[in-house]
Length: 266
Length: 182
Image (cartoon, rainbow over all chains, first blue to last red; front, side, top):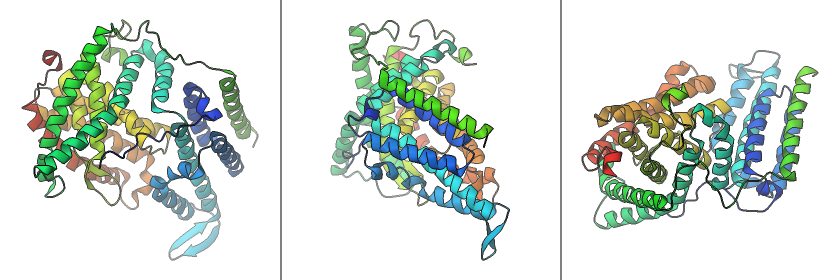
């Protein structure tokens, strides 16, 4: 029952977007998110939406995969739209019971829906085209300048890598233990909350014990291979920025310039 | 401020390797447990099989610094798995920071029940703040502060109860001093 869970949303592929350096993708996504909050008009959002559709096509990811990310927020989207529509003061469009829909509200509602959907679509696009390990690598590199402030970039990335490596292993183990305990009559799904919490103990004790054992073995194996932190460590695959990344970053900069111009001279 | 917490971060790796490895694996365990739902609420949010317990244990066994870092990593893993993105600051508040504060448990290593309450209290504070700032418009007639407290409390209070029970049982079986255990 636990086995068929996929970690993250990564869809393997070899499109231009897949092959971009993870640093480029993370930075561009962050900039795009900020730009979304600066765009002043509907025309601007339409351009950004067209850009997002273009990127999805470039990534050769099925559109429904991207839109699936919108599902958990569907409720918020509808609520946001109706709140803006009825709560903004202005010229009356129509009345619904005691509520007054206004033209200004309709405008604001459409803007907010565009902003939220694009926010989700772009973040999904990042996780759909970048494997969790590549993301971790990218985050480690981008955090490096903050090491002077005491952010342990390498250690954070190491923990993340270990976690990603062991999720499938522990998933299988948890599944096995749950089935074994259920075969012995354990019941995880009935009774009140406290009963259920106590029924977890026969699952959690073996899982914790084996996790500590694995950590022991892992630490020893790392020590035996002379692991001493990030300083001077070499990698098999170095991240390299290429022409592709230069183009992508230039396009992102152009986007920022565009939105600044749009705000200055609307 | 950060320098105060991590005084000699520049001098190579000051975090114990054993703790680092354990934190990584416990983050994996927390992720696995977050898939096991004890109870799902109709309006979203669910009570998991004590998925915060492994993170609380990082704090309990290795102290608040590693607890904070491990929690932040868990937050990023959660973000990658189920992104709920509304605003860049909301993402920071609801993921790395909220889960990082679970590491506060490491401040009260002698008293597990208090430690669990402190850690989950820290997480609640972050989600509550994010609710007040970013989701105030959805509060309807209620005050945003009240609305956010009710919404976040509805799943975190049961989760707190589960975690206290599980941690107090586990604390009797597992050493709370990671370094000595090694």
